[in-house]
Image (tube, rainbow, N blue to C red; front, side, top):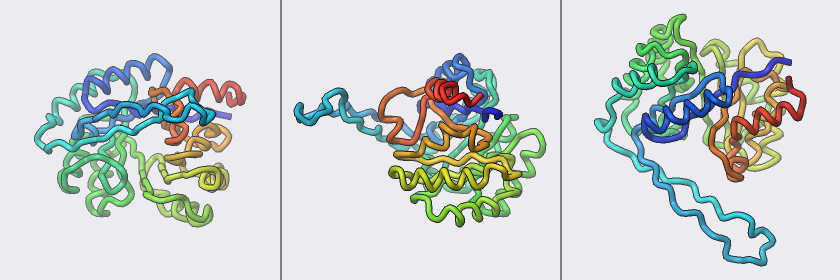
Length: 268
């Protein structure tokens, strides 16, 4: 049983914050990191955790997690060229550059034309991997794929703003993306066991596929396919250097915790 690549999605909304997180990811043995370029155009506003109000509730161990708010900034607030140089020179590991649009849960506030230009610059920077959503205009996406050539590998991603539907339908959709990238990444919203089992079913049905896949959820139960990725023959697993009980409710998992889980499950 071979282990998937472990990719740490870097946290922070500035180059310095991401570089520091990349150093931590390198220290814990990550294989690759993802730089979310779209987050350079937002400022993270972290609200104070909410203290429990009922001491008799039976769970006074922890405060209530409140998700941060991301405030958009102007397009000209980011020096992209300088940022790309910093990422290229300041990160030891291979890098996936992503600029996620708002339509797929990202933060980039500009137009699609501007975003395509950013993706083009990202490829020209010599990055190891580029994330290209499958719903990019076909003509524009083909240009980006051609620009990537053999030097930059492609993550063909699709983040659905909904819960997983029929596993058979999802498997069929995955087959439609077969030639769209080096790894096909599918992400759904999950809200508990029912959704988690559907995604697990999809991953199980496709574990012998010739396509390289990464199937996961965002929300409760979304980490099931990450934890059992070696069993499901997933090719890359996205993790975080963040810690906290709230990660499970977001479908995320800490990098070190994932490696510990794999050792306990004897996935090695």
